[in-house]
Length: 465
Image (cartoon, rainbow, N blue to C red; front, side):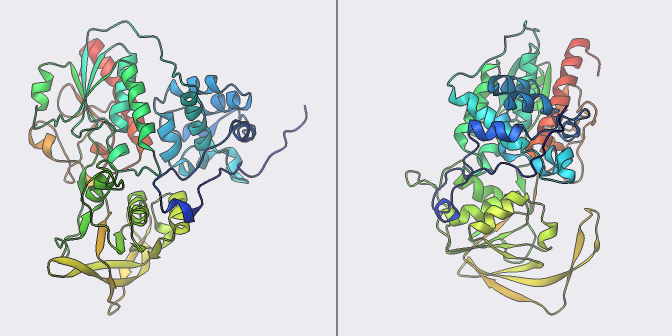
C-alpha cells in the first residue's frame, strides 16, 4: 500500500477583512466550501488510536465523522457528531480546539493539526442549508420529569440527552431569550444568534420545553420544583461579575463585562433600531486577558470607539484567551498594554476619565502555572479613557444557593458536585458547567452535562442516591 502523502498545513478559511468587519457585526470567518471541507478532512491520518477523541470533552467520534466528510457524506458526518453533541454549529465556532482535540492530534507533532473545529462547523451549517434538520425518532416516554435550570451550553446538552432517554424535560431560563452565555456573552460576530436559535430549536424538537423569564430562586425555589419534578439539573452558569475593589470603581462609564456585553448582545445596543443605552466611548479600556476581554475590546470598536485598549497584568504568552481571538483583535486594531496592573479609577463629575496603573515584571509561576506579575515600585502611570470594562472573571449567582440551605457551595460561590455523577449535596439535584467550575469553556460545561444526564437517568430508574 502506498504511503499517504501528508499535507502539512490546514486548508485556509476565508474571513472578512479586518478593515471591513470592524464596521459591522457579521461573523468574521466565512467557513469552508464543500470542496475545502473534503480537502481538509483527507488530511486526517485515521489513527488506530485516535488521541483527538481523548481531547474532546463530549467524546465525538472524530475520525468517523472526518472519514465521512472526506467521502462527501456530509449527512452521515452530522449524524455521527450528533450522537454525542447536540450543538455542533456552536462548538465548531467557540471550542478551544487548539488545546483540546486539535491540540492532541497526531499530525500536530510535526505539522498543523486537522482543522476539526472548522469541519464540525461546516457539516452543521451544511445540514441547516439543506433546509431540513433530521430529528431522531422519539423514544418511549419514561413517565419521569426533569427540570433543567438554565438554557446555556450545560442546560441545552443535558436537556437533549434526557429528552432522548424518554424523560419529560422543562428548561427554565431567567432571561427573555434562551441560550445563556451563548446569547448574552458571546458577540454576534463570533457566534451569530440565528445559529444559537437554530440549536435551541433542535433541542426543542427533541421534546424539551423552554420557559423564559423564569428565575429559579425567586419565581420558584428548588424545593418547590422538586414537588413537581423527579430530578433537577442546575446549569445556570456564572453570571455574577468579579470586580477589583479599587478606588473609583463605581464611577459612571465603568462596566462589568457581563453588563457591557449583555447590553450589546442580548439587548442589541449595536443595532440602530434598538434603544438600549450603553456608553460607547471614544477611548475604551478593557481590563483582562481572556476570551471575554477580547469580546469586549472588539465590541467597543464596532459600536464606535476610536481606540480600544486591553490592559493585562501579565505578558501575551500568559494570556488565557484563544490565540485566534487575540489574533483577530490585533488585526482589528485593538491595542495591548501588557504587564500592567490597574490600581485606581479616576474621574470627574461622577464619570471615569483615567485608569491609574503600575508596571509589572514576571516572577516565579503561581498556582495557575503562569508566571506571577510583580509590581515595579514607582512605575505608576495614567491611561486616559472615557469607558472601561472589567473582564477578570465571574462566579455563579448566589440566588439559588441562598434559597436552598442544603445545597453545599464553596467560598467562591460555586456549587459542590461529585465529578463522577455531578450529584450535589441535595437529593435529586445535579449540577454541570460554570455553576460548579466558575467561568470555563462551553465544551467543558457540555461534557459535564452529559455525565449529569447519564447519572440522572440512572437515578430516575433506580431511585438510588
